[in-house]
Length: 134
Image (cartoon, rainbow, N blue to C red; front, top):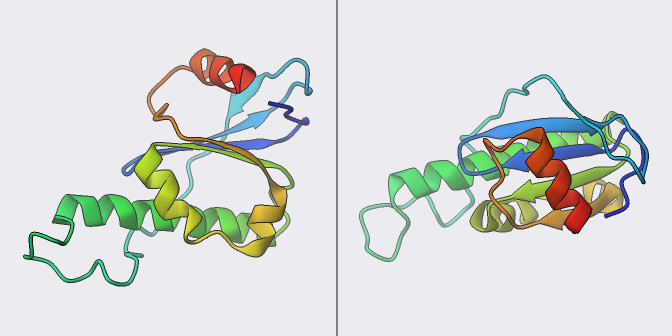
């Protein structure tokens, strides 16, 4: 995957978010961890608020979906504020699906790529390898 310098890489699952920035260039990716961001995980998508039915997700799944929506909202705000010019999102498949529902048009325009893998808790080297292979 072609990653220009200063591309932001968001690595998320239903509970955790890690942000990295490419300090290298497109040929030599060198990720640096960025400070943690506050995520509002109360953003549960409509239709998922009703519980106690076997057809509805359980509470922990709702919390994970809410966290994914909160991550997308935070990224949308950073893109709209001009803080993110290029973005790659790596997320567990279900989390990525939830996040996509909340992408702002401007986020979609700066999105270089997505990887549907759960790499939270992995080393920077593992993330760099996954990006190189993509």
